[in-house]
Image 1: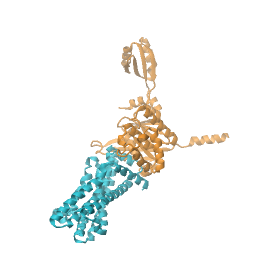
Image 2: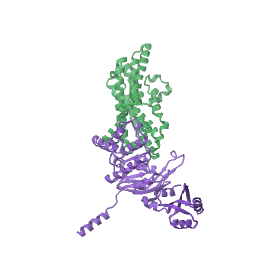
Image 3: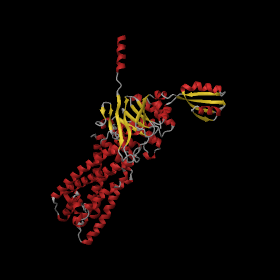
Image 4: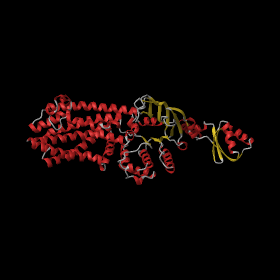
Length: 260
Length: 326
């Protein structure tokens, strides 16, 4: 692992931020639109139901969802960007190793996620008086768990894209989307049809969002659920990395030049 | 004194030629999903070497296996069987270490279009561990040589195809690599720029003992630049020699006559003897076996056909290429 190669790889994906509206809109525009939309909606729901805490649960859920979305996007989106730019052969004919590429996208993923969250947190505080730091130290495991989920989702979709090519690129956006209802981001698990519960139990973020709501509404967290969430995240991350590595090897046997 | 000179010469003669690349029984069979549902052998157990400081041409018609071979040499395509060694290192085991000294440029591969030329080159320069100051110095030198220094702050998408090719060449040589793979580096260039590129490649080879693999469809270019040529057809090596020796293996020559009287008779006369003949104004070009030229000219004289000019072109690498292509 060479730091100068990680630095070079980071430059590759940081330079376009100076001028690329597509990337900036992903990092800034859409998260802010989400916050405005869900802020107003949750305020209305809170006033209509008399349950004012609903505003905090929905907006904190939204911020944690953005953590998942941003952290997966940096993995799969970066890969698809290299394919769109015919740059895979350039990149992997340098000394850059696959482990360095993986480390590079993880570093970028954390950096850009922190940037987006740093932007959303004061907006939520100023416009809707919701301070996500009221969660306290639990915010750390919630954040780390959400990032880990984003990573394994990102590696699964990146593995599909590198193996089957840009014809299946829609998976970069649709695969994380399917987590949204099953992770019970905005509503309690009890609201999900019972026959779908087994699917939700298999998703680590279900325990994070349920715990977050438990904390905001009732003031406590059930630690074993967080442990279970981490255990699932670790297992899925290991499996997703193995899948991505196998897919990359399969892609090498077909040739990275086939995307040009 | 005599003994010292003798020993020195003996030493020179016994210096082994070091191989920059050794390819041994390299084979690539594409899986069915890549080539229309069936297995496809793109490269069939080829073996060759690239000597240190040598320029080796990789030639062959479309589909011969040139690009597949280069992709395997770059590590972006896994061989089915066979080995590639750079120096003494096995490529499959020391990929990153080896690629630290290997670069490539291709007319058919661009760079990220949302980055400026300098940003793109910075990424690649840093990838090889160059310091910022050294990178800028080399970038200025190479972009200047290729007359694209003034384009350095432009987005890559704003460049012409020829300018992108020149930037790719700068990218390949900025790290001062030991081995460079050039895939048709002059294909999209104007003749004067292509000439500059050839001059540049030869200078780099001499200055840094760079070993180069060079593919091109321009046979004159290959003859000018390459020390040796590997000729591929349908994934197999069918010849490996110097460009001159390959050309010399062709026994046909091109005889061009400016006929004063009897142009059509000459054309008919040649065709009747199974020779390829082509009329161009008052001139005729006849493809003929070198050994038959004298008797052919004698026969023309007997037919009272007179000509005012004659030129005989020796076989070229292009003739060899045409003779071996499908």
